[in-house]
Figure 1: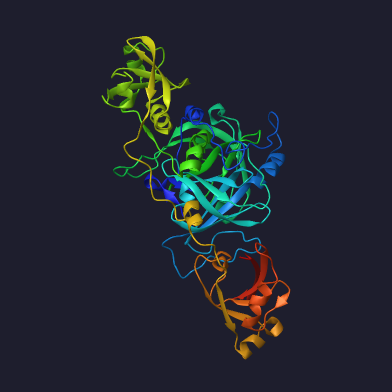
Figure 2 (figure 1 turned 180 degrees about the horizontal axis):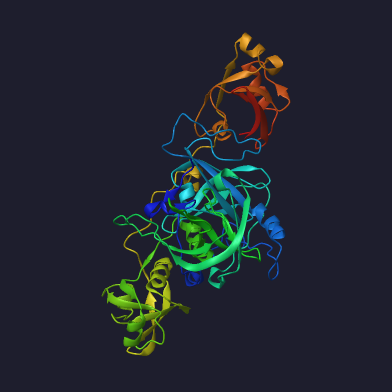
Length: 491
């Protein structure tokens, strides 16, 4: 089966893997960076004005900008290449050596957002567009704690784009639509409502020493989310993305759950995308405090109107907080002008703020409201430094892919038994080549190149050379008694 993860008692299934959080101020602090073109990294789109009540219109507009993401897991069966990608393959994958998921296009030049776990330890990464085109993809940047990744493809023409919304403005009860590839069924649409915001969910497993702990705040929705929806968009009824679909709650064996799905608030992605684009990773900041939630008793004791905020229990002397004059007993109530409701809000806001940023912090001390400016220091635990196997950096440093297809003549009797009485045998397909990416494998029989039939191995190269560089070359292949078409680009 495809890659998935589970939390405690196998309740939180990562279709997906998880994240969350309080984020508007982080996005504000770290606004969009310029890409290799004019304008911001995400280029908006054409959302409807106001709200719409037509789910059919909403789905029709959004689906062209949603892609099916697929790759081969490192450590799988090295002798088992990917199945053919020609035609309109749908349904569950045929074995467990693949990672499947979803992504959505945020820039017409080919930038795509998905989940980090979808591309983790994956090679031969590809995305399939709504119009059936399949493009080679690479990873621009990825961040495991938030489960966000930025991919890049090289389209020949501008791609359709989904506009990004503001998850801080999402209201419980409003409509929500999820689009993705559950179990490989690409561009499936489900709809529901936003069930809750800032939902804290235990993603399970201890945090490794020297690693950032995973975030666990989600938008909860009853729009159906399953394995393969990972990285797909959660869309509001104006056509804007409000979340990145991330997980679903499966319940317990005797108490199965339904309609409990989770999405990463889009403002988290907006805060990280500029760093993923320019650095390939998302460096964190370190505030240097231990904080706890404020209950009713503590609110009364510290002179607060409501039990909201983050109560500082300890402040490290030489930390960002210590240098700004924060003290134990301070209650932090705002971060860059955005309210801090709990200590979880503070943790996420502080960590997602770029190192070196200066942040205005509102606090209550001795019943008085004060403000301090905190200059954020880099976190002592840097993000993962090893780039993903499908990193764009690694791809740019490698040699240009080749077709690398070795064929031999078929025995006369075997050739005579084929439809048309001819064909050539694929003897070897090198891993990582264009032929392998097209799903060709040793033992396949090539029957035709376009309209040219193949009777001998010597006829293959001249047939390929009739196409121009970059052309999609159609190949008719026979495998296990069945014929199918696939394409390979002319190198």
